[in-house]
Length: 414
Image (tube, rainbow, N blue to C red):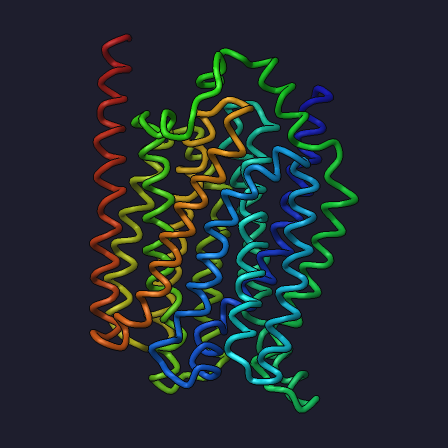
């Protein structure tokens, strides 16, 4: 193992650790966001607003973080983002304690900004690894969310009971847990992410210049998005995220309406987040072995199946299976799309383009979250799931045509 490979492995491990801690914090809060929204606002129509605000803030922050990561490095950017998450969690906790919807939304804004920084960590892992290992590197970071998928939802209940014994609304417990986890993650990144991935990424690009797309010049984001491969990558991540959010955000409220308690809701959300992250190591390896397009196609098809399956029954088992598949489909779209986008970028194009991509992903997520509450209130859960299935077909179509064209081009040169 070369020194560069050793450093890349260390950096990827640190990024895995921070992803594990941060995702547990975000998921603990996300489990209850729609319920808190309804309780504090007094209207079920507003249940999706906290998640929408959270995602919208993250969307615009993602573009900003692209410049910040370039200016102060990946280590400085991630540490700053996680610190903002600590403050945001504290604000959300306080808002629930005093029953203030407006202050809670402010806390969601801060947490959304923090999450945008954390999500860019996957690209830091990609840039320090050789091109043929990028899919695996991204998946190794994303799989850190498996810890969050297990820890996050299940700590919400016990933490709520503890907070309730203090005379505070039990819903606030999850946000206190988030605060602690973000603080630990910030310390891990600040102390462990050395040397900065930005500098290692430059060395990797120098050693493998022929494999970096567009390394001869720095292109604008619009120029990059004119490439079919870049468009497929962005579409798969944007629509995969929107479909996942549409169904996930409102499922807890859907279950609450069928008299399920927090343990049942936590179990279903946990199965969903387990599907989102647990198989990342597989999706990353498949992206490296089979190609990015086929992995995106599998993910999109799985999303369609998941949306339809969610309409079968409001019972815990059917919903748990459907939400697991929803998470799995998202994972394949997310890892496949992230790897495909990373393939198209030179070192100087990465942070800003990836930030712009996450801006689009966040906007789609916010739209899905905001609309989920209104669609649910007006048309019901099943109709919302069918609409989501229709959107999931779009990346499947785009990826299929692009992959077929790539195969024909490869055969023509062979």
